[in-house]
Length: 124
Image (tube, rainbow, N blue to C red; front, side):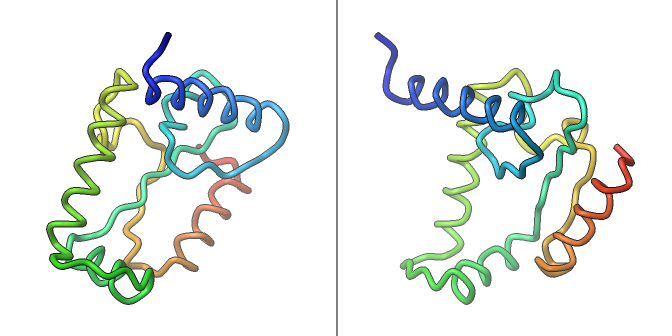
């Protein structure tokens, strides 16, 4: 019997593959870049931002309340990194794993427009 985290990853992988087989879709996180690495027509995007920008986003846009925002964001990064590194043979955040990397300080609408334009042009 698999541990719960492994069961979740296995089910998540099945769902991601099912969605990718069915139609065009956008998948945020979930190790999708790794899960779909053998698929054609997949645009792998890594969205990043400086620590201070991410702290502001948690406070102002997500309206989350934390005692120490910096500590919270760093812990969230560590959790994401550990999960990705555990379930894939890649290293989290390595640019070579992606077709496109964007700084979200450009603005989320601009980031979305860039991703859509790159995808529609098929330049990946």
